[in-house]
Length: 184
Length: 178
Image 1 (tube, rainbow over the protein chains, first blue to last red):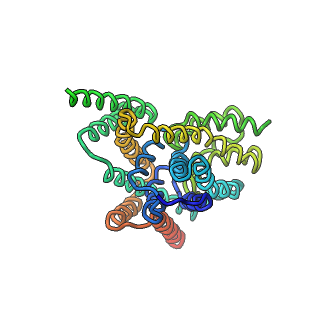
Image 2 (tube, chains in turn green, purple):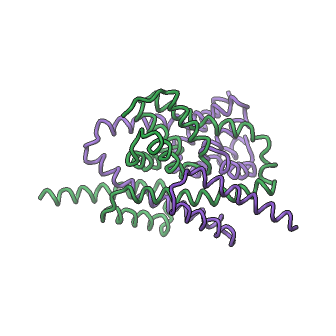
Image 3 (cartoon, rainbow over the protein chains, first blue to last red):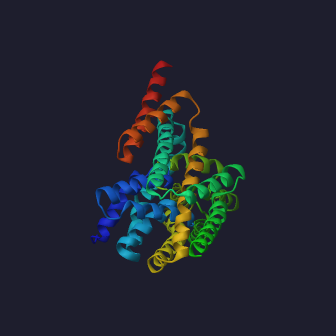
């Protein structure tokens, strides 16, 4: 793996932060495009692990995955550089827009742009699902866990945290039982 | 003093909100009721703006609340405080991953988190379809975007640009007709 300077790392994440519309759920395709396809710094499989972990840790997903990538490339200072990169443009934008909030949400042209971007976010989330789907090992275990998660979320109305906690325990149990069975 | 209070409230938000920006809503709602740093109406508008300005929604709202309350310094305090708990968690988890990458439980957890993550994404996508895709033009735009994403590997920013433009064109057409 090639060494990357902290400044370069900051700038890559500055770009990711600047084009990240619609929140953390759409960051996977963007980060894959920048870090795996263009720069060849981190393999796509690792990014998917980080994304899954980022969803299960407290805080903002986009910041979490950026810090995982930064840490992987340059340790603690890398994590901080990536984090600062990803939040720089958003902070500036909000500070500039804060006083025009009502104008922004009432103008029909801007409203219409909001509308379009809202649809793009759905398309990008489907893209994220597809990326995870293609890059994960889809054995029986994968489908069992997916089904349990969906049932808990949709039918039993579990919150994301409750789902992550409950299903993680179930998943680790299934795998331990499976492992013991194989050993015998 | 206000800075410490901001730092404290957003540190708490960062520490206890799992699952991305939308998980911060109940905390932000609570902060608004206790301190009145911003109104509920502003919060709602903020979420609309946060979804089109770059950056994670959770970060955007923290910046906004901090800025409204105590200016630029407040914005920085609130935003950074919200991330610090995650920074600590990420560093700890990364270290554990490095050290115990062959450990059975570490592998088992990561293997389990992937399908859960897929499930959560499906849940979020369906949750977003209901309020966003309400008419025929939204359906058409979504279908076009999905077809484009299946046919070719485009830079993700393209989808945002394309849909923003589509939105703008529709608004222009409407205002011309009326």
